[in-house]
Image (cartoon, rainbow, N blue to C red):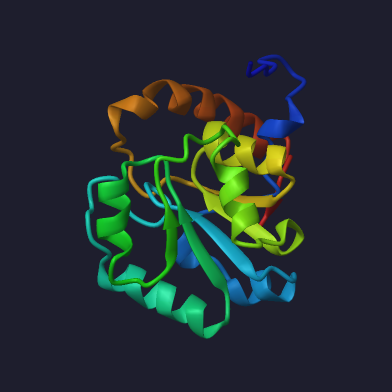
Length: 179
């Protein structure tokens, strides 16, 4: 059961480690300097719009840059396998689809099977209710981004309402460091 407080006290499981505008403006040299080696990246509205089915030039350049920086990259998505596989096909990165974030039943075994060091990993995502909540339950740092687009898939309508509430508190009370 997911429990959270809507009043002044905010459940720490919904507070990201860092906040930033978007993945394309992030200083990955700083990420590397902080000791992170594995980037676990959400796909929809973090890496690309949910309605973009193949990576654009900007995305390809970013992934290539991250590989050159020796980051291990994993795309982790709640979306369907077909969508995720088609998107990452030419990126040559590991990807895991239909993971049902924020639940850990599928995510934790996948990370453990791939020998992911949680202390040297960071999750990059755009949703408090999935990415941040899951990250905190795993004990992995997380950067919360502003979604790339305002148009979302219908299934994210209710989580986005809660997301807006939490973001307002996070920014108003400076609960996460700006990256």
